[in-house]
Each structure stands twice: as C-alpha cells, then as structure tokens.
Image (cartoon, one colour):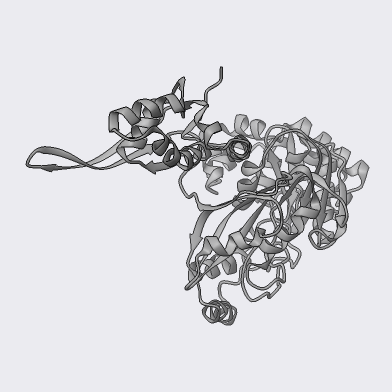
Length: 489
C-alpha cells in the first residue's frame, strides 16, 4: 500500500471527519462552484474555501490542485502524520508549500479512489510508465455496462486504481483483482483498505495470475489501444500488435468462467479496407462456445485516434511517434478504429448466439441492466421454435412509437417509410412494412400471436401457415431487440 495500515485508518478518519465526500463537497461549495469544478473552473470553489478549514483545504489541494502551507495541510490530514503523507506520496513539496501527490477522489458519498494525478494537471511532467488512471470515460463506460446481479466470485483483470473492484464488492462475495504493474496494485490496495475492503490482489499479465481458476463474473478495462505493439505506458499499451488484446481475452474467457458466468470488457478493433468489421470481431468468438454480444459505441479515424492517445500521455509534440503509428495503420489498411463493449456468457449451449452490431445511439442507463436483459431474451428465444414463439402472448415495449415519412402527391400523402422507435432502454429503431406494423400493433397481451396471425391472414388473403413461417424470424428479431416482450400473466 501507499500508506501503512495505521496510516490508512488515520486518513479515513481525516476524510470522514472533514466530510470530504461528493455530497459534502457539493454542500460546501454550492451549485455554482460545484458546476465550475466539473469543467475545471475553480474560481468560485477557491473563493468558497478561503478560510482553509479542513474540508476547504482538502478541496483546495485535492480538487483544485492548489499549493497550500504545510501547517494547514497537516491540520486537514490529521491524525495522519505529515511524515507518512509525504513518504507515501499523498502530498508532495512544491514551492513553499504542499500540493497533491496523488489523485484522491471522493467517489459517491461513501468511497474514495486513489490514482495518479492526471497528466493535464501537471503539464510538462511526463507520465510515469506505470501511470495509474483515475475515473475516466472508459472507466465509467465499463462501470455502467457491468451486469450487477449478485455473484459468488468476481475478477477484475487489470485493476489499476481498483475502481472496478470497488463496484464488484457491492454484489460479489469475494473479489480478485490482477495487474501487471506492482505500482498499480499498491494504489488498488490503498483504495481497498481506505474503503474497508479486502480483495485478493495478484500481480501478472492479464489472466496469467489466475490460470486454472474460474469466476462467476469477470470484468476488464484492459490496455486496449491498437497499433504496432509499442509499449510506453502500461495503462494504454498491452504490447500486443493490432487489436490482439480483444481476441486474446475472448480466447481466454471459456477457461475463466463458471457455468452461467459472464465476462465483460472494453475493446478496440480495427476496420480494415475490404473487410466487414463485424465479421472480423465475430471471429474472435468462434469455437469458444460462449454467447457473445458486442456493441460498437464509437468509431474514430486513424489521425484522430493517434492524436487522442498521444495527447493522453503528453506525447502530442512527437512527430516521429505519430508518423510511425500512422504508417502502421496505412500498412495494414486500417481505415478506422472502433470502440465498444464485449459481453460474453458461458451458457452451456451447443449453439451459442454471437451478435456484433453498431449501437451508437444514447442508451437509457444503466447499460448493465440492458445487457442482462438481452441475455435473458436469448434464453427465452433459445427454448422456443417458431411454434413456441407464436404460442406466446406479447406486449409492445413501454412507450413504443411509430414514426412515418411521407411524400405529398397528387392524391395526398403517400407513406414512404415507417419506423418503430423505442424511446427508452436501448432506443432501437426498426423500419417495418405494413404487415409487421399490424402484427406489432396487435401485441396488447391478450391474444397468442398465432391467433393474431390468423386474423391477419384473413385480412390479407394469405395462408396462415405461410404467414406463420415468414413471421417466425421476424418475431424472434423483435423480441431480441425488446420491441415486443412476453406478456406477464
């Protein structure tokens, strides 16, 4: 750990006593200053903390990145001694005072997370090769996407500061976390201890430390950045060439999961000229025996991608590094890079379902609930053939909307396109023809779908069996999307 066990206890006492929590800070600063802090405008926050009481000092040092006198910092951190705070790197000498040596972030109203100070706060100072990230955008994406059902055992691969493990501790009996970086594990151990958690922390590259073990839930925010395999910062660079990290985790998943277990991780993948990106990614799961749902949330062109990651570690002014990276993309015909969430489940089925699709619309949070429901719908569909699907009664998704596009002609409006839109959940949209629209419109939970088809067959002068055969895959797709759902008796 960064601090001794007694030092951690003393720090927790100081933070709790000062009420250095998200709610405590918001109450102290008020809405205007709190809003300013969110966009790195600290003016109002600094005015609100001029008295430098313990909470005000902690806000100035760890939120506003100010240098304060040793006396006021010592008073704010008491009973933690200044000697231990300095030795552990919690604060560091700067000018004639002390400033934050780590990113000590109140998280929710009960937790704190320790990580390295973001590079943007220390311009001109290169990031440590084993820089430990705090709570960034990718971190939040995985937090939101994780299925939060109770489990016995959970694993966080590449734990970094330990924030994923912190969330796992709320619904897993035991938590194991790994990282290739001994430095990251010290941060994670301190985060765990500061929050009263006891995790199994193991050092090693990705799955190596847990070889031969199985878990009910595995999550990972790995070093997923794609490129020539150059390693300069372990949080970003895996040393694997291209997007091999994503395929490597897919291959390891069957050996990591208990029966019914789930694995979720973030990944980047390349879009190669002349190839379908979704087919490429689907190939990662061939032969695994796992159900897989991959959703692409973002796509970047190579130049934007390289600029993003060079800037992230302060290398934006390195033209040679940029050129080498872009040359690698050119040589491998990479046109774009996708980012998304991979969710896998060991369902024990001979015919696993693999879906790879673009889902860039805004999704109603929490995403993890949407993913869990998707797997539930697969279970519903798996045990029903066409006859079984048609025997069920269905309701439309809550608030389902119909959107029409029409053109004015000599005889009035002519409908060109009809789209079903879900205003909630995954917010899918689906273009449908009049027959499917009539079918969905009749889903009020009262009649089995086969009875609805019989009525439609008469109205459209079509044999009911012919209509039923055509309807089977359509109904399955609508159920998978959540546009219609089984009616509850």
